[in-house]
Image (cartoon, rainbow, N blue to C red):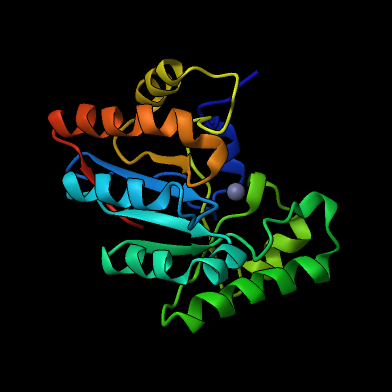
Length: 207
Ligand SMILES: [Zn+2]
């Protein structure tokens, strides 16, 4: 079962999180999780530039350490950065203290590159109530209302595109993945997604 659209009931329960942001001019908030990586990030930022699109990249700290030059390219293009932990930890399987330290490590890696960010997205969208209180002291937690499932190897690129389009509305916050697993789907779906909504007069903004 794939849940492309986050139910409104869930969005209401966790109303302190960002899920979507409707605007006067039809706007989409593209987000890319897990990078930066050489295989995909350059492709994504080149494509975004063609559409004058800005996006938010929820980076894994260890990937920033490994690929600082690619991270700098993302910054130079004017995109927003968010924290996605240092090692892509699962909050439901990780000790609270270790998880919080991992967020701090990622924050330090981001800041070592001359960038500040107060946005945080938990890997897998998983968080405990306890962690939520601690994280929101100095971060805004950003979720999504549309999940592209680009990382799902059993999903065809055509279906990835069609479902992403179908569930997107004004203000939608959609998740794609700057992750090797998503390569096949994102290379097909992202250019067509950008083309489709550009033609409809949508703009793409960072958070
Ligand atoms: Zn992730």
